[in-house]
Image 1 (cartoon, one colour):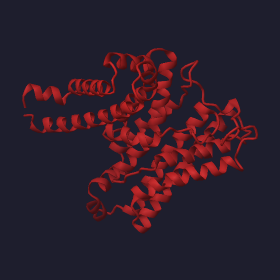
Image 2: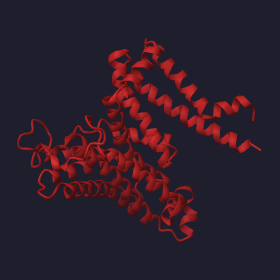
Image 3: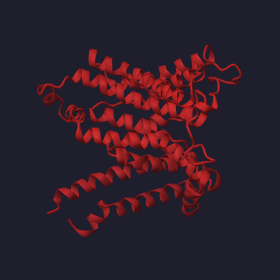
Length: 341
């Protein structure tokens, strides 16, 4: 393999390609690339508030991406993280609005409620797949719409806060708010929870029998079945745990950012998280970096629109190009490694 191929396959090549493609997208949109990049990084990393918002978006993407990672490793395409996150947030917000226990206990109960809600929503698709052989892509996707309608109906009726102007629950007592991680910003210790979860999953995937079963089920299901792995049970468990992780993410948004449940709490985190998981190559620690990169685009993208007049559609194109480039980089890197002496 020659030197130029090694450069393209390495991190430097990926960075150069990303910069080139982003520049082309901005030129096509009629914007100066210099102005666009300046607005992106100032908007995402230009100060305490900007960094805080970037890490808030990183956290919101990281939980569902880690859940999706777990399901994908088992060969299951969980497209329902958006609905699982929403149901987890609903359960946490509804419970938090009526709690009267000490703060730490209340926060713990809300996170558990989020895990149960999201896990139950994932379990529905898991049961359908295991029991009837239903396509999990269609099942999880359709359950997103059911979750949105279900949540809207509840918070427009019996769960609506007494002083709420829209479809939302009552505000949480401040003692049930997650402590701030960066004072003066919306960033809470939920980021630390997400990073700890990533480390835990990395260990589970690499060091446990369950991790081996997931990998075997995803890569060679027939061989896994013959070795004694109960594929139906594993399918149900993987989608349940995947949903539970996304549900915890929803609970942290309620407790750490909004301090109530609102039907508009997610601008599509569960869908963007699919790209985050894939860009992270289904490796929890790499997913953390991918989530941070998408967090920069989520928060800095607003500044690009306001300061550099980069159209919103161009920002979506840029996100797609980044996914394409990083996926191509991994492919080239694999080819390079396979031909090295």
